Length: 246
Image 1 (cartoon, rainbow, N blue to C red):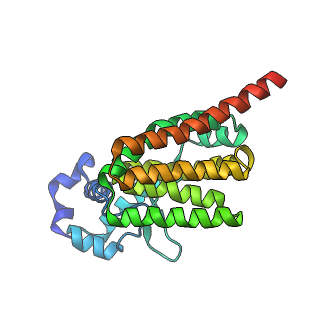
Image 2 (spheres, rainbow, N blue to C red):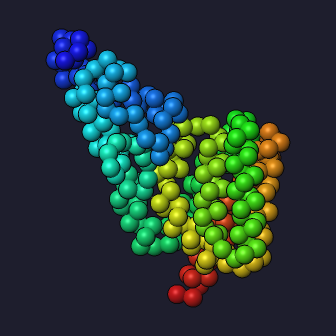
């Protein structure tokens, strides 16, 4: 056992070595060093890097798994994870049971994704801009072929999230990803199924990317606000029609 593990302070339950290790791992995740989906180094390497025993590392990893920040990788190892399974189960159930709740989620997205677009215009790296350009090219190609609508929409919004440079926001989007899949499936195949809708959404996305690429935070934010405002307006129209016919 290492010196760190035998430190008298470690005998205090409030200051256990495994808790301190968990805090250090969490700090590295929060810094962006280990991103959502990335595999962590093995227990032995983590123990050597932090000067603690593998027992302490194992306990720290288990704590973070319980909190929903890490997950076991098939075949061994651990990765950073944030997905719909980590969410309040009642929210996930609510969305599955009633698509009308997606209107509220769209309004919430309208707040946080406008912020993300602004941040992306300020922080995007050349690699982020290249990813956005690649997603747009794939979207145009797939719309022309009539396929992969939802997948490209998810890729687009996650690419904006990456470009924001905010690890916290990336985790928020990771948490929402499972719900986002349901939401965008509903959008692209029920609410916005027509070729005209495809072109409208494509135009919205182009405007957002143009603002980000030009480093124009106000333009990027306005474009995202217009896009999600259009989505919310359609939700409210559909709801009004349903209420009128009931």
